[in-house]
Length: 243
Picture 1 (cartoon, rainbow, N blue to C red):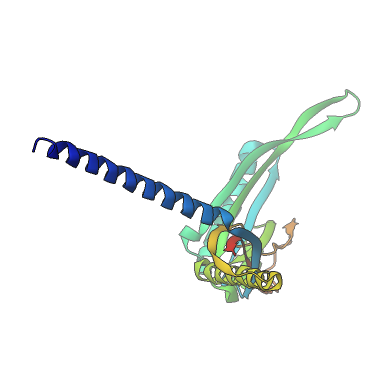
Picture 2 (tube, rainbow, N blue to C red):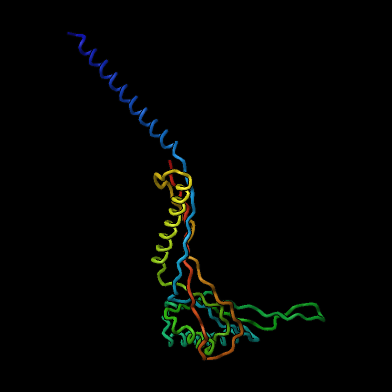
């Protein structure tokens, strides 16, 4: 009768050992199966064209005078006139942002002495203006140059909310990668098991920017502008298991 506890202990130990063996074997089989699967690596790309719905233009005022005080004073008057004109065209204050302000001496080289001396001062101020109504863009540029702006550093078209078009481009890029993988698998006589990994490697591309214009003459005439289309690009890398 006293041997029963010992027998039960032996049975329990054997059962535990058997369970560990089964788990180990099952894990090794799963790892072996996974290791045996080959991989297809592909890239997917997509380009979606869309008409822009906003523009960003860099405009500014540059003034030169014999003294820094005169230059700043003249610049302030012209800059305020520019701000007032932009607001009268319906541009909100939140869509006008100063990006640069500089006061620099103007040097004159004297050949007789071989030295340089200060001959005046130059004050420059650049602002970024976001235009949400493209129908007013040409008129806005004309009004800006007629009201003090003598520097225009390009026009950049974009989207107010690019997320939906970015998602569309991304979906098309994934579909392109999947199509390529299926074509490769069919040609190789294998089957796709599952997608192992997808990596995003591209995104929204900014549009073409118009060249800078300096020393533009004052004119309230509407400037001809064509927004064209924006290319929204997406690129993905995909790995798929095959057998």
